[in-house]
Image (cartoon, rainbow, N blue to C red; front, side, top):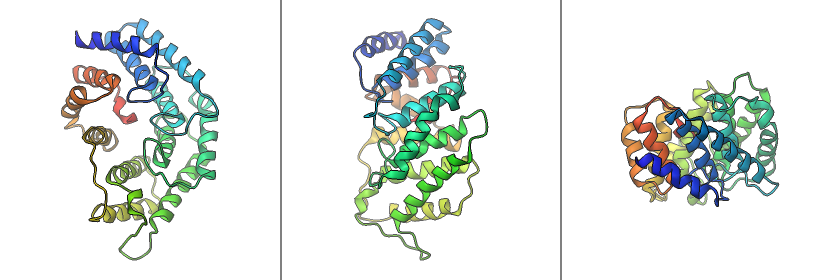
Length: 277
């Protein structure tokens, strides 16, 4: 079977992989094997996935970037997801306490010129949203304060006023992918019943930016598909999930993503891993 071949290839790749990426690194491979253990009902693959978690945790250092696709935000989000979906039996707050502290400090101490999801502010903020939605006990109020700081940063950068217009210079700070990622982050916040009026103001400003003729448009179909299926998970629309999974399976450059999409296409009851993307 194709999925068995994919599992075999990923195991060979993981032995020499040092990157942490969700798309083509250890995070994606680890997530694949946790899902594959449930897909095949074979605990051997779960044990292998645990070993990958250990390898990832041992690779973390003071130089590990905060970003989502290749850094602390992604690692923490995957751990929170795995605990939420009962792949791992652990205290999520105890495990992620250091992640919270380091990423909160990143938000406090940096001027954010990169608002992207993969490596920038929105990815780090999404980690904290994931902590909220996948946590088993009520989170400390400080998490909401962190989210508020992110929203204040966005409002300040967008130069939002009471007038029905928005300007940002230079415009290339918000290409279409970044705007869409930011809107998805705001939708994720609203799913947590976050009602601060700044969410509406930022959404309104982003809608105006998207209409700008000077905006750099997306030129990455693969990333657009990943955004689309993440949107399905966030807003709860599942009508096109099978179509998007088939596209990712056929066209993604990441072998782990192809395998994950293939399994979910065959077994719709597997956990919705694409909420992590």
